[in-house]
Length: 288
Image (cartoon, rainbow, N blue to C red):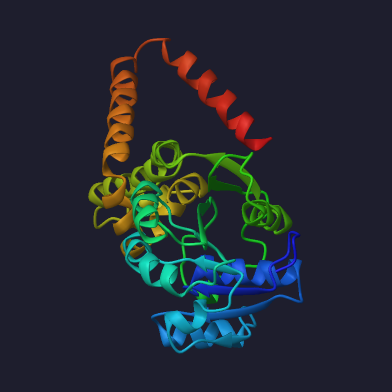
């Protein structure tokens, strides 16, 4: 592989929404890249090839990984932890292996064991991008644009392969954010996993309060739709995330409970003005 920001051969392991979107974005950024795909779901693999996200499909994991400069693993968290050992055994010595798992501590531990003594290098990663609908049919070449992309390493990492991947992340429109695995999991527990569970809880309240007359849903507007967008995500996407980050999510839910209790206690006072101001300021910051 040339000592620059381009990978000549990429293996995408898992051709769903994230893997498919990464493949589409990488090919747009560097059309000369050769991309091979592998997935446990043969229909997803075939669809990824028909959408030109990948150029060829591999019969098995080892065949996909062998000879690749970059191995991009986009599978559920528990599956990533299990496949890292066979990937490490099959990866070329010069290869960089990275993942797109939504939690990092569990994967980092599995990677440390799997890549010990190997010349191939593992770099944990997580694109903070997605949709409420999963699968290759929803893959989007622009999915990562303007999104933070967590890289579990130091920005001053000396290995050229890490620098190359960070350049590719920037090339597809994302913004590299460097952190350790523990900081990542604590952070996403608050800014990603908590909003998901809040949306699920809100949906349950609305459902339970609705009756045969059609109310209160008959009066629902775009505000409720916006708040419930995340509720469209399927449980099978979130199961591993919730299990692997339960301690951080538990902390986040406790903090949310305290905030809701404060609002309840101050509904008839002027003390909530400060809460609105703080919320307004945060919203404006996120909109920049």
